[in-house]
Image (cartoon, rainbow, N blue to C red):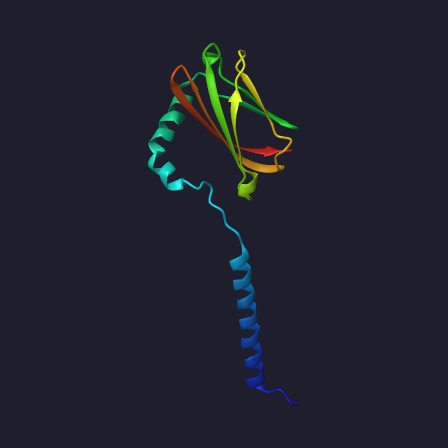
Length: 147
């Protein structure tokens, strides 16, 4: 059978359709998850986040984050170490929401706290530490990499 330009056009169109069908199949099966399920409610409370960040910036020092194999150690500023500190940590994995982790931390009298990370996936995380001392709320946002 001799191929002419009409057959070439049909083969190119068939290849294009096959590529588009494959693209649509992959797009349909790709699972995209939201950063937070309640993102709209969080957006309405955004001014509170700005205030917490401003409170943290007003301190003499900032929370020191030390990522070690198997744990993350937090050291709170000296200015608030003599006060009762309550803290909650959110670790959000950008590549997979199943790796997200939330924990309430117990802060010692020396102003330090440690979180066990042995059960978490290795890789990049968005760290969000909400903490309060003497009735004032603070916020720390950072990016970390768990080894």
